[in-house]
Image (cartoon, one colour):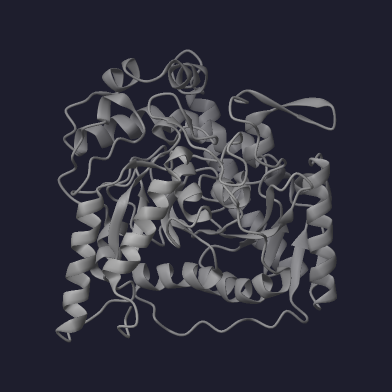
Amino acid sequence: MRNGDLKAEDYARALLDRAQHLESLNAFRTLDKEMVLEAARAADKVRASGGAMGALHGLPIPVKDSVNSKALPTSNGTRALCNFRPRDDAGVLKSLLAQGGILMGKTNLHELSYGWTSNNAIFGSVHNPYDPTRVPGGSSGGSGAAVAARMAPLAVAEDTLGSIRVPATMCGLAGLRPSFGRYPGDGIMPLTDAKFDQAGPLARSVGDLALFDAAVTGDRAPLTATPLKGVRIGIAPASLLSGLDPEVERVTTEAFHALRAAGVTLVEAELPEVAKAAIGTAITIISYEAMPAIAAFLEAQGTGVTFDQLLQQASDGIRGAFKTYSLPPNRPSQDAYESALVQRLRMREEIQRHFELHGIVALAFPPVMIPAPQIGEEAEVTIRGQKVPLNLAIARNTSLGSCASMASLILPAGMTSDGLPVGLEFDALMGNDRAVLALGLSLEMMLGPIPDPRP
């Protein structure tokens, strides 16, 4: 498009046709075809007139419907906000538009981003392009489904406790949950008070993740693939590799064999004790902060909706989840919350020490213990004949990256015998986002591609 070989309008039309062909996946909540084509025609005019073209010139980008957009409503997947028109674009969207990106609609999500399946009772479930009877992961399920189904090469997602990483692994994508604070967080409804919530990209290659990162941060220095020979990557068998679904375990084991064959040194060392309790720490903090964080956001954004009104109009499932975790009398006590804050700080310190002690640049593990579950499996799943709570199966491994504010890269690692993708997460210390992307360029080549979905 930058060279004029392909018109932005023709590209946008092809993506829109693809989205329409696969609308049964329910990836989008709002998609204004004419708005997208008009923006694409404007991009073509800029190029034709010799105007400056940004890094994302003419690229239609689906955006999770929890990220504020002036041009389209931002529902956060819930009834009370279905017609809410923000006054301004979220900071991360401003950065993308400033680089020539085009808003390609708002993607469906788990209601209020409060879950991992994207089974949205208000706007309908999102379907996994690899098997439409299964979830795409969540809460950024629509963004994941759109990219996996080739409706767009890149989408904006957002992650509090796995909401980029879970769709990435379940939809066979590359994903980056950046270090906390790397990208602007304004204009995105949070579940915490400036602790975990972080926007980030879902894409089909590490190069596209790096392009997104450069567009948002302004760091345009070329990224060079890190040679794998001699790279030290940590694994923690008891805490991050135990209890896995047999197919997830098989794909992970085969990927680790490939890493070793490529010259990577896998350093087997258990996590510090405090890090093993990351899921409890994370859920305590989120459960305590979610209600006041959402209430403050609703007021600051001038939505005209209170938290009570929001919850009153929410689906039964989401109301039940908030009552179970985030509302009195079940909301964590002040003491439990303050203890979790201390644990979180200790976790960051201990993980840094762990990396230094073992000379590792990243931890490697499957982000989720299971492949994509069936739509409707909300409470528990079966692993090796045992019933396991869904939140444990999905959040046990992603919690550490959230608590320790790590730079977390997801790459597709292989497929189950049923044709479902399985990913690997590579967590680097906070601030090492470009280093983990550079490593990812080589890891991606070594792991190889997975088959496209055939929806």
